[in-house]
Amino acid sequence: MMLPVDIIAELGKIGGYLIFLLIGVGFGVSLELAGFGDSRRLAAQFYLKDMTVLKTMFTGILIACLLIFLSSGLGLLDFSQISVNQTFLWPGIVGGLIMGVGFIIGGYCPGTSLVATASFKVDGLFFLVGTIIGAGLFGESLPAFEDFWNSSFTDRFLVSDWLGWSIGATVFAVTIFALVMFYFAEKVEEFFKYRDTGKAWSWKITKRPYLYGAGILLAIAALVWSIGQPDPIRKWKIMEKKYSGQLTTRAIFIHPLEYVKTNNESTIKLITLDLRPNKDFETFHLKGSENVKLEELLNAEYVALLTQLPPQGVVVLIADNETVSIKAWQYLKVQGVVNLYILENGLHNWNNLFADKKIHEKTFNLASPPTEVLQLFPKNTYIPKIKIGSKKRSGGLCS
Amino acid sequence: MKKIPKKVKNPYFAGSILGVVLFAAFALTHGGLGASGAISRIQVALTKLVCTSHVDSVGTFAAMGAGNRNALDHPSIFLLIGTFAGGLISAWLNGRLKIEIFKGPKISNIQRLLFALLGGIIMGYGARFARGCTSGQALSGGAVLSLGSWAFMFSVFIGGYAVAYFVRRLWAD
Image (cartoon, rainbow over all chains, first blue to last red; front, side, top):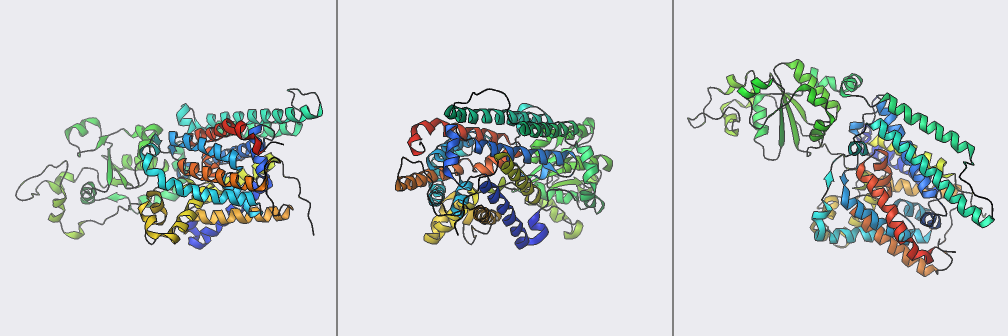
């Protein structure tokens, strides 16, 4: 089985919600075990006396990150199906600064105040009530700065994209970064502890078990880097079972008339990729289509434009022969492009289909037949195949 | 029976559990963990009780609970209930289930509660601004290497450290 699973689709709404509940229990337990139900411990982070927040948070991030990219590298998890928080860079930074202020004044963050309230801490309850009020105030005041709030947007923009590194190298760097931070966190804590007791402080690593732990994490990170993330060709081999049915049943091959219909629908953003040789493209191509080479579809930067289409985006592939279009479909499918279809037979019977057709006694541009042309064919000429799936898995549960 | 609170777990141990739970969340639900989204949904549901039409007129509220939509019919609410239950169970098992107010010794209980409320309001506002809280943005986005989440995470720490000095009376011994 390939992860991630869509638990609500698998188990139905009630079963799915139950799983969410159980995950929540795990979340609550881990926060409580770390001592995050106590505002004094959380606040102490900002006075450098107790680094529990930083240590727990980054351990959690690091462990989850290693597990995600290790299982993705091994072909157990399809990372393209994992929801990545969208980047709204500046609103995120401003919001973060505001939250930092709220954190030190109130002593909690939303998740920890929940745990504090659950363990009967009255200050946690007051904080939680405050967050509810604050969320309301935000909605009320948003119209004043909505443009800014929607600015500097990039969907699915990873640290690795920004650095121009591979995911493996980035994971390794994040691991080193976290370990260095842990080292300094330990040293700072020791500094304050020793200052009070008068013991001599040094840079030496004093806790041997931690050194072994760090070694293990580093080894896993190196493994993630050396395995690498599967390229689309390898990924198709892993995921063939999941998607090949759509090819054999021809569920994703669309009739030219359905193409015309979709192309004329104003609510749909249609992207047409023409994989034929350049000279054929120059001779004739559909209006708005784009000439690309098959290899280009292995280029992550190019494909990012296709995975970031709005939910009502549809991608249609055109090629001279099916070997090419199927290959292209496979490459894009495993990279997470949704609403992806192949034009049946490419453009081979395009001309035959439309050549003798006239609308109001007039011929029309073959490169972009108008929607009226559909009325010249019997209703059951083709079976509609395009289904606009709800593509966007919202960015986590915070939205 | 009076229980003596047990010592909290080693942060790396607690963090490892947190990491495994976070991975499970991604593997089973596509998305990570979160709390502030559910909190907004509760806010929308409460607003709706008081003034239904107002929910329809404010953009971010309408997205969650316009018309017949029940703002609380969402997986994040169940995650929130679970988090609450998890906190309760763990606090109970570890002898930390006790009505009390955590505060610095230099301020009164009333002061602490007012500042907790104020901090909560600021935090709730900021969490919507940043489209997620410490769990939804920093933890979940951080683990999948989202650039925005990393930028967000650093700015939370910067924001906290920047004003910590000025509010030190709240927490100082």
